[in-house]
Length: 314
Image (tube, rainbow, N blue to C red; front, side):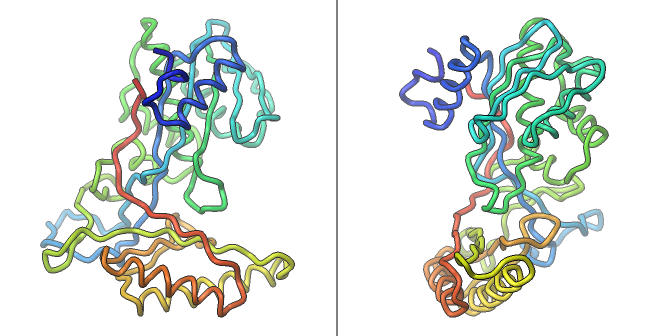
C-alpha cells in the first residue's frame, strides 16, 4: 500500500508521501527517515564503568527521537527536482553533473551532497526529491547533518533498486566528510546510532547513558530560549537570552539536573539537560520560573530519547 494511504504509518511520513505524489504525480520509490543528532560533552557523562586506555576523550554523540525525512523516486536524465514541506515556495530543478546551478537556501547542502555522490558514481541518473524536517530550526538541534544523510541514503537506495551498486554507510560517511563541511560526529550518530547508546564523536567507542548507583536510566530535556516580543533586538536580545539561559541552568542544577551542555559544537539558544527521571518535573518548574524572573517567555522544553540510526520506511 502507498505510504500516503497507510493508516498505521506515521502521520508526518504520510503527509510527506502525499506531498511528493501531489508535486510529482507519482508515489515515492522510497521514504527514509534520519534522526536529529546531538552532542553530550565528555564532562557531562559520568563514568558508569572503568573505561579502557583507548576510550575516547572527545564528546559523545547520539541520535534523537525526532527526525528529518526524504521521499525519493529515481530519474534517468541527470536532474534533481527538489521540494520541501517546510519551504513550499522554494522548489528547484538542478543538474547533478556539469556546471552547478543555484539552489534555494534550504537545498544548498543536500544539493552539494548529491552532486558529490553523482561524481563518485552514485545516483547520477537524478531523482525527484521531497523532504520534511519535523522540528523548527528554533529548537536548536542541528538539521544539516540528518538532512544530508536522509537524502543521500534515499537517492542511493532507489538507484540500487534499479541495479546500481549499493552505497555502504561507511563509504557514505567518508563521501559526506569530503563533500561538505559539517559535524562528522553528528553524521556518525545519524548513520550508526543505536537505541539507548552514546557513540564517541570519533566513532571509537559506545556506552549507555550513565545511570548512577544502579538507578533508572537518566532522561534528557532540551531547553530552548525564546525572546520576548518587543524585548530588544541584536545585542540586547542576545544578552537577555544568555542571561535567561544561565539563570535557568543554575536553577535546573539546583533542582536535580546532573549536567547541562550545548547540543551542538557552538553555543546557542538551546541547552541539553541530563537528569534522573524522578527530577524531571522539578527541573521543568525551576527552568520556567527562572525565565519568568528574567521577564522572558516560557522556554520550549522538548523531551529527548536516544534512538537508532537512519532507516528506510517500508
